[in-house]
Length: 190
Image 1 (cartoon, rainbow, N blue to C red):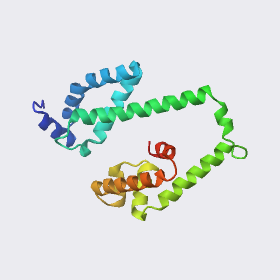
Image 2: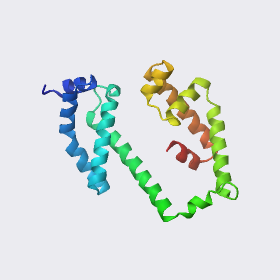
Image 3: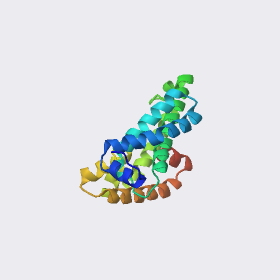
């Protein structure tokens, strides 16, 4: 079925209509590819992120809020994928160009290991300060990397409840991290 109205197209897409999804893909993929290619200067990377973005869009279709710009939803997911890919490449280059980093993190001799361990202990003690249910939701999201929907299903609560608890956890953690260091905050929540 060919949808002429974007509202009907989005409604059908949210219900799992593959034809509606195909229309959305055809409508937006070239624009998204051009945007990513300008950022990445790599055909392969741009194509990879376009594919990854549309896969995530399909997986998160039920979370899409009608009335919200599909274009904005699409580009937000693509931007997050771009940032992840960039971080991954930067980390890879750092380790390729500085293999001594591997040897510096020796648990018996390295000062870095002690700093790392202390930082990890601080993070763990701050997380322990969360109320039990909030802490569990936070860990499932940040450590186990479950989606909001998976958390809601696992704990038999609503997605808005998950969102609310994550928002409160993040707010608490940001305040606690300010006591220690802005760097720690950036590393942990960034």
